[in-house]
Amino acid sequence: MALRHCKLFLAALFLIGGSAFAEVYSSCSAATGLLLRFGNLAAVDSYGRSVPGAEHLPCPGKDGALSEEAIVKLGIDRAVVWEYQAASRRLFEQRGIAVLAVPPIRLAAFPEFVRSVAKFAGCEKAGEAYLKAYDADLPPPLPETVRRPRVYFELYAPYKSIGQNSYYHDLVTLAGGENIGAVLPVSGTLSPEHILKAEPEVIFFLSDKTTAGEIAARPGFSGLPAVRNNRIHPLDRIGFLEGAAPAAAVKALRSKLFPEEK
Image (cartoon, one colour):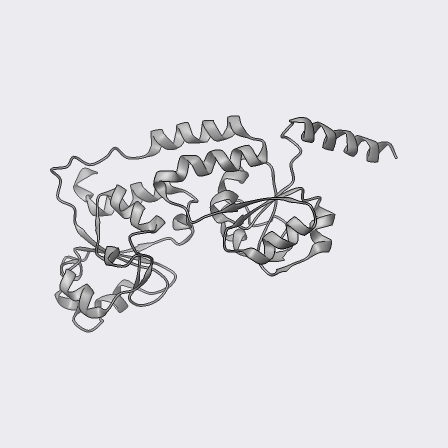
């Protein structure tokens, strides 16, 4: 009984304004990375376990297939989900659990996103400390006189690329590249003809989906500047999860776009 009263007292402290006892669930990879740093992440979805540090956290399921019993057992009192995860959002809201629905991440709004997650989890000071380190870690903007190399960034399937209204477009742009997929409003499939005509000078791809050799061997690709100059670079999918480590991602891209800066 004494333990129960103690838990009720701690919960009351949290409602009054304390932050140390929040039990937060996250199915948003960008928020998962932040909450791990803030220290109050209680559980993730199955996909969230791919975020470094979250491998052994409890997993009550995935969107549309969450275990209500596990949510109760874990004491989840708030949840961060992607905006499109309607089933998870409804489940939490029906149980009276506060939900923060996160829209697609854009770099221009990244500080606002960090502050919203930090406030939701009761970790405002930690959020501001993270943003200070993030600003210091971002590479400086390139001078306007620097020519931007043309970039083809392939996602999860052949010819699937990043559109102009995407987190990955923001990464490439801030790193100093010109995204040939910007003709797409959102990420989608480019025609091989468009890629060949655009003549990308650098190609990035997710390393667990294909190989540089496979890309170079595609019809017509042998004549591309990126292929001729051996500038086809694999990217670690985990390091490029949406919103998880944007400063490190920008630095990684820039090091390949401008190797002479090393």
